[in-house]
Image 1 (spheres, rainbow, N blue to C red):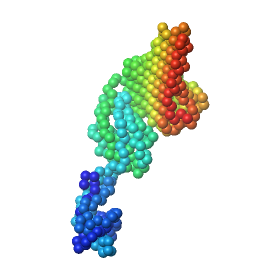
Image 2: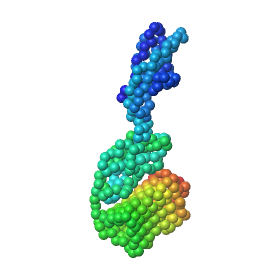
Image 3: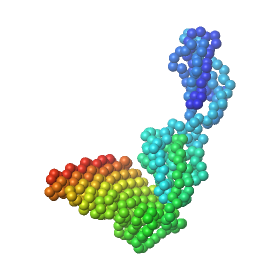
Image 4: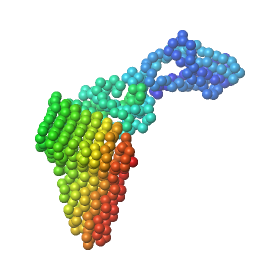
Length: 442
């Protein structure tokens, strides 16, 4: 049957009344029969209609034989001969490629092009106790037949909800299959998706390390630095627009702050990322513009040095509402968070216009790590900006707090701040901002 059930009609000649039967199934007629199923109630001997036996969903194609032993209410027995062979097709979860229909596929699957050489897969957790991880299999010619047979793939643990596929070819369409897997290395059937890498211009580092002992200015409005080696910058990094650094090796940037004054996006992808200078993507100070977006993806380890600030806060304003905080996403295997280091996406200060203006709303911070090394006096902030004092007119409202989510490997210390902004004084005074949401900070 379509759901891989064996259905048999049985009748017992010469018996009257009811019988109870047991079924025996085997691939070898000469072998001793083994009971595989027994009816749980008596049925009329004249016709046991539509007997069902659920076949192994992970079975390979084979031939099986079936026989029945039935017992009447008065104790008489009948044993049928072995049937002719039933040709059973492979189950829908055949383990030919270690695929199992008993494992759920991930849901909410999406793929995003991040650079000329990388694509990010995201999903919603499968929510099954047997799932120990996810596999993103890929090819540039056709969909992988199964996750178990794929040659190119990225594996992530069950506590992850994204995977960065790197080392791809620019301007190339890729075919993906994303599956869950269990401890026995069985895979769900998978969800398929197509996505193309970027063809944007950029600086490509082929085959080796890139070292510079001075500052690096990336002048393109949308800039991509990518390659197969390591990137070491001893100095400041400046850019306008969006910046992607995507190296299959390590990225180490030391020196001053890495600054975008346009409130856009910076993304760094590498095996190990070491930052000994801060990243700032805030809007232009004084204009109250929103903060930008910072994404740090390290396959192995992310290290943020002592006293370093990762900042996507909104801009403060002198005459308008404060800018809202941006977004910070960190995903890494292990995370070294140095002494007095700060990750923040705070709302900007409201300014004084004709009245006291409102503070900006705190941004969103999502940190996914496998393990932490937590320094002293560290802080993660997404608080609302303060409303401006209105003097003889109404004061501005404080901005609402943002959100901080640390879904796994909580550092074990309350280092998060999502407080609403303070209200501006005035006549009347402003209203305090609402506290935001924090998860995993305790």
